[in-house]
Image (cartoon, rainbow, N blue to C red; front, side):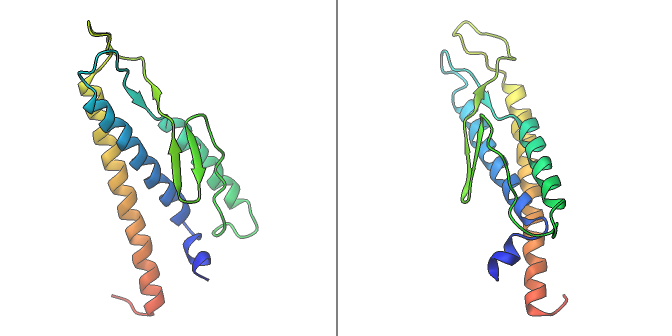
Length: 145
């Protein structure tokens, strides 16, 4: 019964979204930590491919007999492996910045912009998850307010 409650509605997609943004946050923080490391190449996760895969999985789920419940079937990519307990990531180097004399192609402004956007996305996902659980809690109690 609990499984039926936790794999319905938006919960599975929100869970994967929060997992992805959490993993991306680690990658971006690692870029900041290695800002002055010679030969370090900043890395990132491809948000576009994650969003496309999540959209595809949600679309497939909607086509099922009961579109609001069941597993969210995400296919693995070069960067992402989806397990039951989370997402394993393999960040790839981005080569879009200026190469410095120490062979590091850093761009602090770009990294901080990506970090701010990712933080906002993560907080939004967590807040939406919290709202979903609050609605479940209200339904279980059978009360409003």
